[in-house]
Amino acid sequence: MSVAAATVIASCAMLAAPLAHAAWEPTKPVEFVVPAGTGGGADQMARLIQGIVVKHNLMKQPLVVVNKAGGAGAEGFLDVKNAKGEPHKLVVTLSNLFTTPLATGVPFNWRDMTPVSMMALDNFVLWVNAEAPYKDAKSYFDAVKAAGPSKMKMGGTGSKQEDQILTVGIEKATGTKFIYVPFKGGGEVAVQLVGKHVDSTVNNPAEAVAQWRAGKLRALCVFDAKRMPYKEKITDTQAWGDVPTCKEAGVPTEYTMLRGIFMPPGVTKEQTAYYNDLLKKVRATPEWKEYMEKGAFNQTAMDGENFNAWLGKAEQTHRELMKEAGFIAK
Image (cartoon, rainbow, N blue to C red; front, side, top):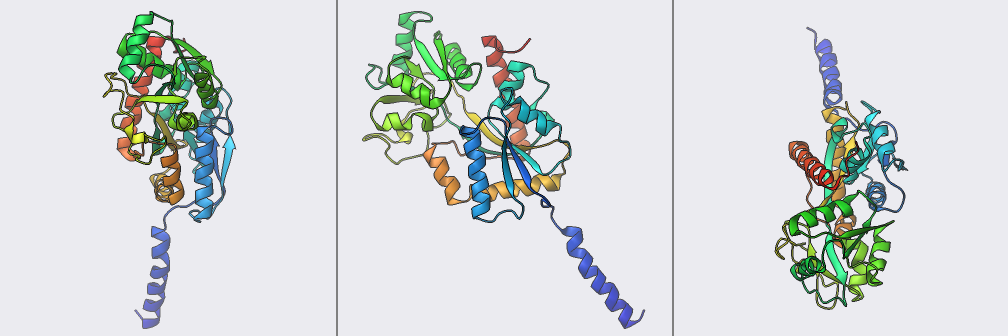
């Protein structure tokens, strides 16, 4: 072989090598589906991620948030389910990933999509009015028992959704029975508790923090396995980390809400890995860390087999609680 020919072959090999090993990345705008309306927790998270991606120049193509809220989120989930093999589409999920198909009978399951990443878990806190005599969860549930079945009111967001499902879990664990009163959103739930129109709520930290800071509400316990790690004082005397777990307070009930990212079915491992890497970069930014602290989130993140195993267990937990409450569509 001549020197010239060898040089040409070597040059071709050098050009081909990076092409053969080039990682996949989007070649057009990526649609970020929110299976809920504007302004809620899923929408806020999607738009935060969008803003972080732009600010830190994490993606060459635009990330476009699209709200598809119809059918308690079924519209968004079915859109992603039906986009088989489309790598330019993501969806942000809450626990409606489980509750919507179980409660409505819509032909959808989380396995119909490709799990990418758990971004965090939302905490739930048991709240009472600050003027109520209950200083801890045990004394409150003792009072609920003493009052008799369906005498005390638990306020929550929506029907057959997370707040009511958690209420069913509390009833099962404590032998109590509440009148569940649904409202349109967590902000309204907090206001109703301040006004003493309900006796307790299970609002997320961010939904009641303003009223807690103002001394209008009392946080009795958090429905997580561990205390929240945040030490900065919110009230004059308490930080989120000072709120005991409900298990510590004698109420063996745990419930956290998923905040996860999925892709359509039929995408490749390389495509999934691209978004996994992107989301790890998002979680490393100061903007994300500030958001996590302000919302007092459980910052558990996972992907791959661990995430799949968690999803299977969470689905079963929701099925059991919803079946007990009579919430599953027939």
